[in-house]
Length: 185
Image (tube, rainbow, N blue to C red):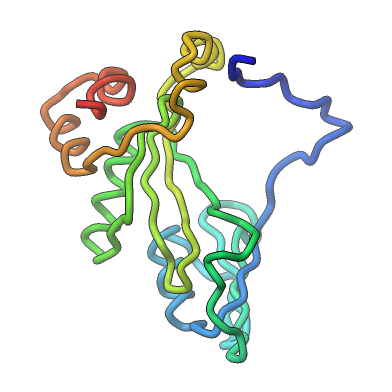
């Protein structure tokens, strides 16, 4: 079966939105500082035991709880691989990357998945966090790309250099060309 963007479930059968994520950590101060930077988030409540962070009009998008007795996560354990956030345009992705780079936060890898362009980071606890942009502006154009079978042949995608992405963007190369072709060069 060829991949495609599915139709959404009827509103009465699905949540209206994803609300928040909760992390517990023995590195409370480091994690709070990192996510404040990574998300450009502000605390709703921060008391040294918990921090409720938001970057938009939701009361909180991330809660970080302090638990000094925790052990590092076993990389061989089952569970969440990463969580992802999206931006609207390539310019947003470039600016996100540059803002984090200026703050000393660097990605551990970057992938063009064909349908998204994604930059992956590790937080202080080693959780993987992704920032991505869709490579196609409409569901129809994304499904046309899926219909080519390219995703079926390579669902992981291709690594890219974020500095090359920035260079191409600053050179005025059209967004669609960078997202759909250029990063494979």
